[in-house]
Length: 212
Image 1 (cartoon, helix red, strand yellow):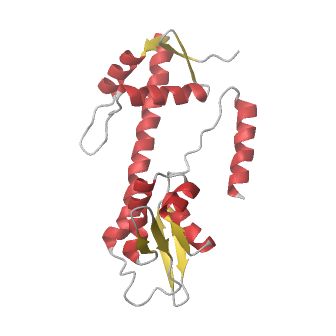
Image 2 (cartoon, one colour):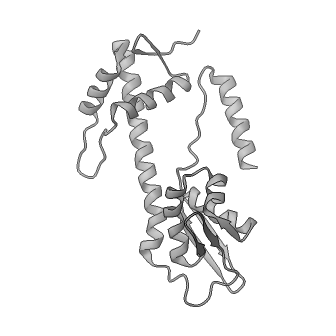
Image 3 (cartoon, helix red, strand yellow):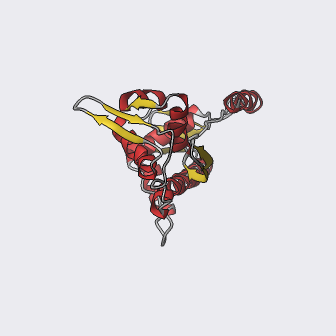
């Protein structure tokens, strides 16, 4: 239902704001869950949307292979294994078998008295990832604002000039993360702004896209 509403809003936005379009970032944010077992319910479990998606799949079926989970959530197995550690540490998911070719996980029906000690470090893993994602999103918003401002004033700039100017305008300060993109990452970022209809690039020069 949420996905349908997001798609509807995205379509309306594209219609009214053409040629701009929305790009959703579903990995950002924070989710609070009640996790239900037959012997008890763990309330107010905080995690990232990805962690919540992984746990939800175990409500559809109790046993998954690592590759099967990876295919469903569209996350590489090595990264997914690290994400699963949050739920394994809390006893919500168990690794039940491992071979050279396959790892199998299962969700228990009963949590038991020894599981879920609610170690603060375990809780903070999910919350910390949300904070890191939010900080990254904030940096991207700042970089976008500076890029659009620079191109409004200077009309066109090459990739290396944008890169050098962002390093100058967005330095690290105390605990604040500064601009730390590589030129390859910046090119991807600018390509996304082109896809969103905010920029255009011709002859290696980036410009503000003007509405026709």
